[in-house]
Length: 219
Image 1 (tube, rainbow, N blue to C red):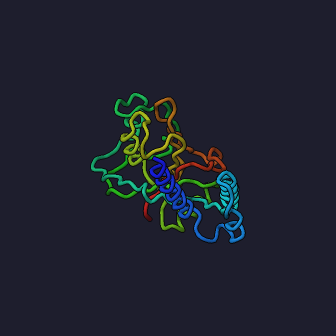
Image 2: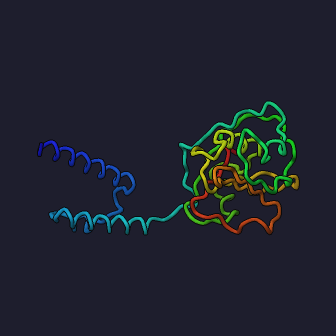
Image 3: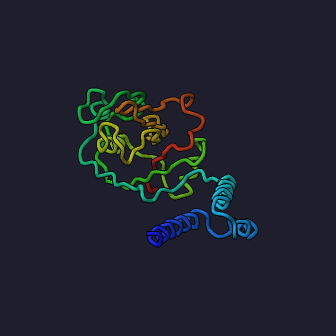
């Protein structure tokens, strides 16, 4: 029994070591730090490694956007006209919508178009809207999408269930009838969707909080 427990412990330690190597590659810890934990009691090693990891995390530079390549999703071809007011409506029975505001800033009709691939990117730190746009451009992406695509994603989580869209906050950019891309914020509140479009420049938040998911497509 003792040998079996020791074997299990060794396997767990190996998995932990692999995780540390994945997130903190060679060079994060100095030779001096590594030498400090040699031949120490188990309890001391645990505390020392914890402190070293916290220090490495604190000094690790944060990127504006973390690329989530496993969160790509196909937006299907739009074969028929999409009527915005008919779909983004609190009386809609296919999707539970609690609040919808500001969509009169956009064309009331979206005409048939091809399908496309959409990706989501998590803000790693509080960021200005302009900074988000510029970063996406450097990645070869366009931050613009359309309301039909947003509604398609909502239909996959009609009551705000766990899925591709997160509970708070999903950020899209949709070109308005004024020719300017407007932020559209999508979140879940008490099992229903809340859609807020910012029609006027003065309404747009100066910045977006870390943890916000930004959606973009290939340029």
